[in-house]
Length: 257
Image: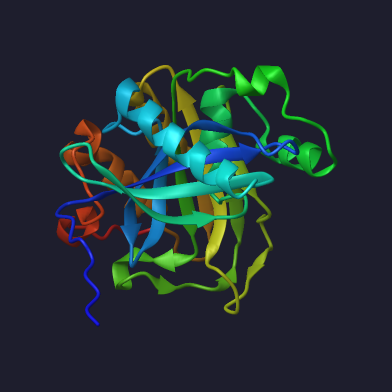
């Protein structure tokens, strides 16, 4: 037997957020761009994708809804695709759970996915306003990890001696860390998620850059300076990148305070 798999040159990782109703019907809440990743681990996510227009978004969402309804999927899930340079997309997998990056969808659709998920599992249909929600603005999430980008992202467990999270309009921080928190070496290295919303992609990038400047975590190395440099990269700002972005990106080490 011979098994062939299509090779896609310069793909982007695009995923669609779905929510399944108790009736077996599903709704899609747009796509997320997840191409900025290291060793297949997402680092920066955004919604909408700079590579997806309205026509392609409709096709992606219809395909995701068909997949969810075919199995009468209940609750929050994510249908993931690879997107090539010609606008063709290919099913990769479905994650049958809420995703780390779900806040960017919440920010651009104005909905609480966890609340909706709990509701449908309790037999409460998806509210009409959620099903009819429309895309507004742009959102970006940076995963703040206890890793040292100066040393090939070596894990950096230890004591956080100072912790100051950014705030203000359009800024959200999801974290359980605080000054005096001991980061353990036994678990995932993510210690915070920084999410911003802006009226446009450029305004969201600018807001994220400002929020990263204000985010203070001392005592251990983190990926905050790495994110600052990625967001300043001309290719990233133009939205011209693939899953291979970090293979050519050159991080310039900086001394953390």
